[in-house]
Image (cartoon, rainbow, N blue to C red; front, side):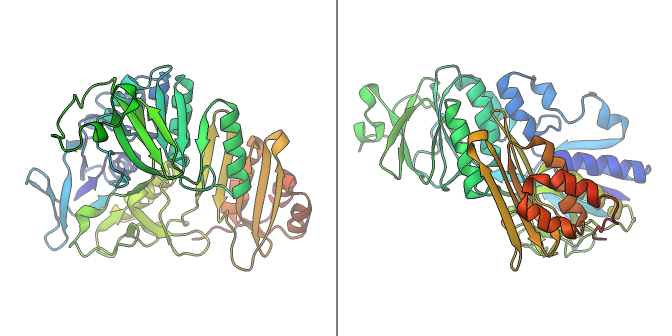
Length: 442
């Protein structure tokens, strides 16, 4: 039996290790497109802060970990999958065969079609190579513009702020973290971040990025009609001007693009695998094509509540799906309980979280309590007497309780009405209802 895994991030590594444990005699091969050892992208901000070195990002610390487990870790990039003959074609023209295939190729950072986005000092923050470039440029006192204040953007923001840069964050949405925070919660995070010395501009987009010359003039204007190759594109001291949709211009030394990510599935065109926003899977993490599975950021699996397909690009979800996929690849029929949106974020010391259907559901009811003076906020979303979603800011002791009540789908009975009046009593509700049978999908 040959198990082939495309991707050697957290999902790929956990799947490979699970397969080795369940099927000691099988061939297990991981293919990753970077020459680095398997590492965690979520550790990159800690690298930028100087809290760890590059080895601290590695998913497994022992140099011979994969060799010891007889897991082949190969460098390559998949460009095509052929289910008819069970092969994967790589970018060097070679092919790899498989009996069971797991696609765990993760996401790639979005680069909006902004004029100037290809300038030398405009970077995403997604790979170790990106981190090296940013670390070289993001020195104390340097002016940095970060485009995007989503989940990943807020993690990068923290590292940059701790490095002492002059930071401006530009967010297209009307608040920070718009895909995980309600308007009041997102606004509260914005106020907190600005109180820490980071400027945040919301409801604005970047129209263009220009290289500048002495006096602040745009190079595009200064050399219009001349050869575009003028100047040194690799100069670390190169200055830029960012123009916003509001008309404002911001001078800077570095631009970091953090405008979101998309599933890395372009190479599956023509494969016959059903695709939505990601690879559509059943609860066994199997795609529409037999013997082909998906896990992590590329997988669009059934939601915990509605069973509708959902992509959840977070590391805990990737780990859960990888284990389920590996067990089914090893002929254990084990269904996934369903995808639960989980977001927990530390932004310059302010903890925020959202779980499940935090925006609410049709026919449901909700309660919201905001105390900006104390940097405290909670929103609870109910369907009947079950908590189906929640958002919180500044309530660290509530994080585990909120997730537990939502994931277990615990009937709250009379506690639902109590929480509608006193939403901060979620711990009391959890303890009171903990003895009730927990209902988990599957």
